[in-house]
Image: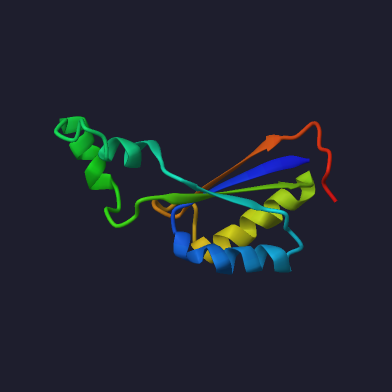
Length: 112
């Protein structure tokens, strides 16, 4: 089993993405609102720093947060899940789309 973590920058695509994952029989996701380090730093009291000024240029000023989606799935479903994600959000190599990664899960209880 793997824990797939998706940090979705394009939050407006969440419903379409969840529907596509469900159609691929990938479900049981948990969604949390999140904010990246650069976004948080850009709101800090240190906004005059040249480092933070540079970070601010990289950020979408209209986007205050991301969504983080967690789902536990069999290892053989990971590539299918990533394919579905890229179909909806676009090539993950492009900036401001999403970040996805997995970590091994060695124990679960309560999953049906």
